[in-house]
Image 1: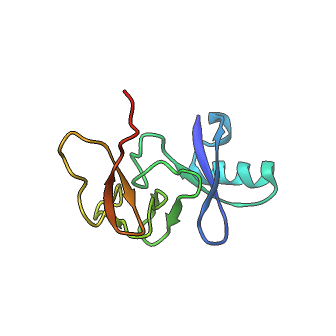
Image 2: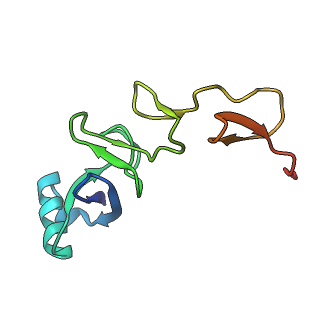
Length: 118
C-alpha cells in the first residue's frame, strides 16, 4: 500500500488516498493511477511514517514544492514553523507549572483553562 495526497492549485492537501501496491511500483505509476481513477487532481506520494517529504500529508496542510515537504496546517497565525518543518511553535512557550492552558490568539498569550476535569 502507498499513500497519495491530492493537492489543489495552491498546494493545499484536499485528501489522502491509499493505492494498492500493484498500481504504484513507482511514484509516477501511483500518480498516473490516481489521475486516471479520480479523473483529476495534482497528486504527490506521502509516507505515513514521514520518512520522506518531512511529514505525512494531512488535509488542509500544504505541500512546499521548493522544499519537497508536506507541512501541517498552522494552528494559529502567530505560530512559527521550526527549521525542520515538523512543528509549529507559539511565539511564547506554554507555562510549565502543571496547570492546563489554551492559546489566546487575540492577546498572544496562554490563558489558564479552569474547566479541565480529569
